[in-house]
Image 1 (cartoon, helix red, strand yellow):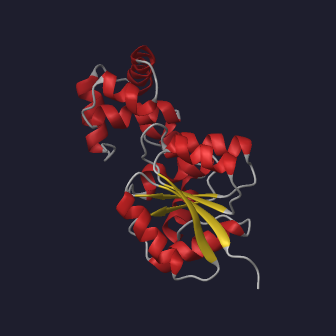
Image 2 (cartoon, rainbow, N blue to C red; image 1 turned 120 degrees about the vertical axis):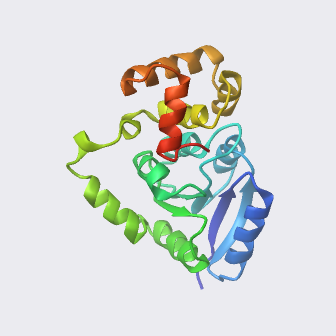
Length: 213
């Protein structure tokens, strides 16, 4: 009998990690071999251990999931990272896949889908839900029709979401591990790229498109 797949869970909510551990403990071919409660710890644990799959949340302190994903894929390109998020697929899934994720699941997904997704990415395949697969197909060839926020860089997009959530420049800087000056640069780029004039208009846009965290 082959060894169980070693899974690293990275999520800042202990109750979520406990729930995931419970789901995977009922599956003989999977084992939770480690847990991280923020992005920095997740990267450190990847560097210090042997893993078959990383199961990672998008929104975490110190280093968010997308940033941690990019760093992990740069250092360990063959290690599959499955993103599990509370955010709807339309907000982060395509960005996560472009950043190197092997798949994307929402936390509302059924437990059996999670097990299927882990097995699938561990085998070297990608995992996307049927609805996301349809979205990816529809996205081909419609670049000019995409909403303004889909054309932003990841950092610009994250800044927009935090502005829409009512965060101050200092809070945004802390959340993204940036200086306040750099946050101001991203805000200026947002205004220019989206043809908006101030934070009020950025916030209105973010709320209209469901980007507030």
